[in-house]
Length: 79
Image (cartoon, rainbow, N blue to C red):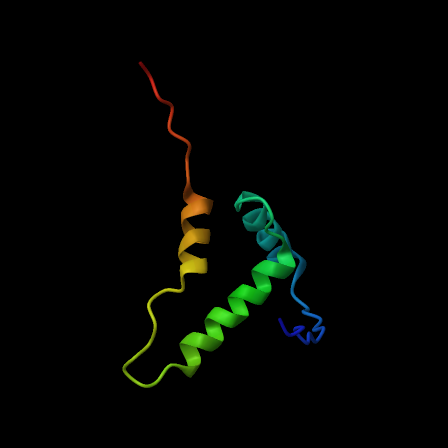
């Protein structure tokens, strides 16, 4: 398997947006972190932008899962 070549990018954002990002990432399944979240969001945006005209992809699965995870409320099961 070929080794992936990475480039480091610094992202500057207002502190309030970073706090919002951290709050979202904390609600996601284990293993998620701010770096992974930002990388996957950028990939999803690029996929949508580069899609041929009239063939825009549906909401990327990653974003759909994030939306579900953030709004998920565990149900209390009663007997």
